[in-house]
Length: 173
Image (tube, rainbow, N blue to C red; front, side, top):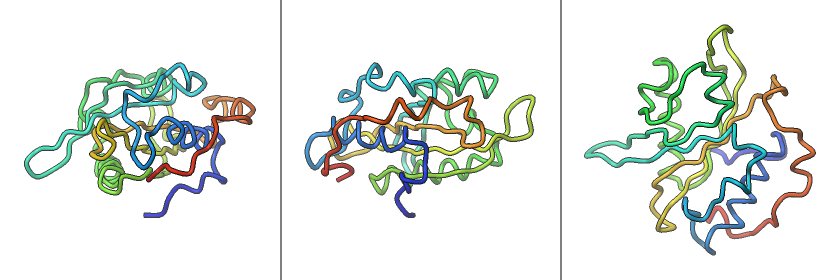
């Protein structure tokens, strides 16, 4: 699975990569305690946090926070729900595979696909699953930044990310 092509994406994705790199301990993944939602308030409505649970023979994921844009577009609240309960059944395997890859690789994973939403057939969506680890090593949460390339009204103005946080060379490790 290739790394995200940040240059071809909305600048908020590279900004988030650089932000997480700036708060991560050297050579480690950032943890939830390292991030401050105030720092990325320009994209907060597009961010979801999913907890990673390790069960006997599989990983499970539960949404702990779902941004207001996400909730509005989905037409329902999915905070607190397991992925299998939160997404349409035909997309669950794909989303679970992306989340599992981000956990196992300890690297961001990008995907783009049409997502069904109430009142519309589909909306073109893209997202990057950024791994977080409380101990810097074992991924225990995913920060998911969502985007809507064909629907700029759901995206922040690109100019907000012209000058982002200082980039670092140590993340992802």
